[in-house]
Length: 169
Image (cartoon, rainbow, N blue to C red; front, side, top):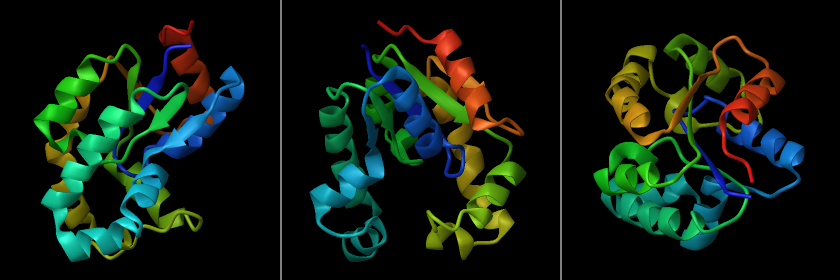
Protein backbone atom coordinates (compact mmCIF):
# COMPACT_ATOMS: atom_id res chain seq x y z
CA UNK A 1 0.00 0.00 0.00
CA UNK A 2 1.22 3.48 -0.78
CA UNK A 3 1.30 5.64 2.34
CA UNK A 4 -1.25 8.37 3.02
CA UNK A 5 -0.03 11.61 4.58
CA UNK A 6 -2.50 13.80 6.45
CA UNK A 7 -1.77 17.51 6.83
CA UNK A 8 -3.79 20.37 8.30
CA UNK A 9 -4.14 22.78 11.19
CA UNK A 10 -4.52 21.59 14.76
CA UNK A 11 -7.99 20.25 15.36
CA UNK A 12 -8.52 19.28 11.70
CA UNK A 13 -8.70 15.59 12.67
CA UNK A 14 -5.32 14.27 11.51
CA UNK A 15 -4.87 11.90 14.44
CA UNK A 16 -8.50 10.75 14.66
CA UNK A 17 -8.85 10.23 10.91
CA UNK A 18 -5.40 8.63 10.77
CA UNK A 19 -6.43 5.99 13.32
CA UNK A 20 -9.70 5.24 11.53
CA UNK A 21 -8.04 5.05 8.11
CA UNK A 22 -5.39 2.71 9.46
CA UNK A 23 -8.06 0.42 10.90
CA UNK A 24 -10.06 0.47 7.67
CA UNK A 25 -7.00 -0.29 5.54
CA UNK A 26 -5.51 -2.75 8.04
CA UNK A 27 -2.25 -0.82 8.24
CA UNK A 28 -0.29 1.22 10.78
CA UNK A 29 -0.90 4.79 11.81
CA UNK A 30 2.19 6.89 12.50
CA UNK A 31 1.55 10.01 14.56
CA UNK A 32 4.16 12.63 13.70
CA UNK A 33 4.06 14.26 17.14
CA UNK A 34 4.75 10.91 18.82
CA UNK A 35 7.67 10.24 16.47
CA UNK A 36 9.08 13.70 17.19
CA UNK A 37 8.75 13.35 20.97
CA UNK A 38 10.56 10.01 20.81
CA UNK A 39 13.34 11.50 18.66
CA UNK A 40 13.91 14.66 20.74
CA UNK A 41 13.44 12.97 24.10
CA UNK A 42 11.09 15.60 25.53
CA UNK A 43 7.73 17.19 24.87
CA UNK A 44 7.41 19.43 21.84
CA UNK A 45 6.52 22.38 24.07
CA UNK A 46 9.67 21.83 26.15
CA UNK A 47 11.80 21.55 23.02
CA UNK A 48 10.34 24.78 21.62
CA UNK A 49 11.03 26.58 24.89
CA UNK A 50 14.56 25.24 25.21
CA UNK A 51 15.83 25.32 21.61
CA UNK A 52 13.39 27.54 19.71
CA UNK A 53 11.16 27.09 16.70
CA UNK A 54 13.92 27.15 14.09
CA UNK A 55 15.68 24.18 15.67
CA UNK A 56 12.36 22.35 16.02
CA UNK A 57 11.52 22.91 12.34
CA UNK A 58 14.88 21.38 11.36
CA UNK A 59 14.17 18.26 13.42
CA UNK A 60 10.67 18.16 11.96
CA UNK A 61 12.08 18.23 8.42
CA UNK A 62 14.44 15.33 9.18
CA UNK A 63 11.61 13.31 10.70
CA UNK A 64 9.37 14.02 7.69
CA UNK A 65 11.99 12.75 5.28
CA UNK A 66 12.48 9.59 7.35
CA UNK A 67 8.82 8.93 8.11
CA UNK A 68 7.68 9.24 4.51
CA UNK A 69 9.32 5.82 4.02
CA UNK A 70 6.96 4.26 6.58
CA UNK A 71 4.09 2.24 5.27
CA UNK A 72 0.63 3.28 6.37
CA UNK A 73 -0.99 6.49 7.50
CA UNK A 74 1.20 9.41 8.59
CA UNK A 75 -0.49 12.17 10.60
CA UNK A 76 1.81 15.20 10.49
CA UNK A 77 2.05 18.19 12.78
CA UNK A 78 0.17 21.36 11.91
CA UNK A 79 3.33 23.34 11.17
CA UNK A 80 4.90 20.90 8.73
CA UNK A 81 4.09 23.18 5.77
CA UNK A 82 5.96 26.19 7.13
CA UNK A 83 9.23 25.22 5.45
CA UNK A 84 9.35 25.32 1.67
CA UNK A 85 11.57 22.22 1.69
CA UNK A 86 8.79 20.29 3.42
CA UNK A 87 6.12 21.55 1.01
CA UNK A 88 8.20 20.47 -1.99
CA UNK A 89 8.82 17.09 -0.35
CA UNK A 90 5.10 16.61 0.32
CA UNK A 91 4.21 17.52 -3.27
CA UNK A 92 6.27 14.54 -4.44
CA UNK A 93 4.10 12.15 -2.40
CA UNK A 94 1.05 10.73 -4.18
CA UNK A 95 -1.43 10.68 -1.31
CA UNK A 96 -1.10 13.91 0.67
CA UNK A 97 -4.46 14.95 2.03
CA UNK A 98 -5.20 18.35 3.51
CA UNK A 99 -7.90 18.04 6.15
CA UNK A 100 -9.48 21.47 6.03
CA UNK A 101 -12.02 23.02 8.39
CA UNK A 102 -13.20 26.52 9.09
CA UNK A 103 -11.42 28.32 11.90
CA UNK A 104 -14.36 28.45 14.30
CA UNK A 105 -14.77 24.69 13.99
CA UNK A 106 -11.04 24.11 14.58
CA UNK A 107 -11.02 26.30 17.68
CA UNK A 108 -14.13 24.55 18.98
CA UNK A 109 -12.50 21.13 18.50
CA UNK A 110 -9.24 22.18 20.17
CA UNK A 111 -11.02 23.64 23.19
CA UNK A 112 -13.21 20.53 23.59
CA UNK A 113 -10.36 18.04 23.14
CA UNK A 114 -9.55 16.94 26.69
CA UNK A 115 -7.42 14.01 25.52
CA UNK A 116 -4.97 16.04 23.43
CA UNK A 117 -4.65 19.31 25.33
CA UNK A 118 -2.75 21.97 23.39
CA UNK A 119 -1.58 24.53 25.95
CA UNK A 120 -0.19 26.89 23.30
CA UNK A 121 -3.55 26.99 21.53
CA UNK A 122 -5.83 27.10 24.54
CA UNK A 123 -3.88 30.02 26.01
CA UNK A 124 -4.32 32.12 22.85
CA UNK A 125 -7.28 34.28 21.85
CA UNK A 126 -9.26 33.52 18.72
CA UNK A 127 -7.56 36.45 16.99
CA UNK A 128 -4.11 35.10 17.90
CA UNK A 129 -5.02 31.65 16.57
CA UNK A 130 -6.39 33.28 13.40
CA UNK A 131 -3.00 35.00 12.91
CA UNK A 132 -1.32 31.58 12.92
CA UNK A 133 -4.03 29.90 10.83
CA UNK A 134 -4.55 32.27 7.89
CA UNK A 135 -0.98 32.33 6.49
CA UNK A 136 -0.92 28.51 6.54
CA UNK A 137 -4.02 28.00 4.40
CA UNK A 138 -2.34 28.45 1.00
CA UNK A 139 0.64 26.39 2.21
CA UNK A 140 -1.58 23.42 3.05
CA UNK A 141 -3.34 23.67 -0.31
CA UNK A 142 -0.07 23.94 -2.21
CA UNK A 143 1.32 20.85 -0.42
CA UNK A 144 -1.65 18.51 -0.83
CA UNK A 145 -2.90 16.46 -3.73
CA UNK A 146 -6.39 16.28 -2.22
CA UNK A 147 -8.38 18.64 -0.01
CA UNK A 148 -11.10 17.23 2.22
CA UNK A 149 -13.31 19.68 4.12
CA UNK A 150 -13.95 18.18 7.56
CA UNK A 151 -16.24 20.95 8.81
CA UNK A 152 -19.40 19.53 10.40
CA UNK A 153 -18.61 16.00 9.20
CA UNK A 154 -18.38 12.78 11.15
CA UNK A 155 -15.01 10.97 11.10
CA UNK A 156 -16.42 7.96 9.24
CA UNK A 157 -17.73 10.27 6.50
CA UNK A 158 -14.28 11.87 6.13
CA UNK A 159 -12.57 8.48 5.96
CA UNK A 160 -14.92 7.39 3.17
CA UNK A 161 -14.22 10.60 1.22
CA UNK A 162 -10.49 9.90 1.50
CA UNK A 163 -10.89 6.30 0.38
CA UNK A 164 -12.89 7.50 -2.62
CA UNK A 165 -10.02 9.77 -3.70
CA UNK A 166 -6.71 8.12 -2.91
CA UNK A 167 -4.66 5.60 -4.79
CA UNK A 168 -4.56 2.65 -2.41
CA UNK A 169 -2.66 -0.33 -3.73
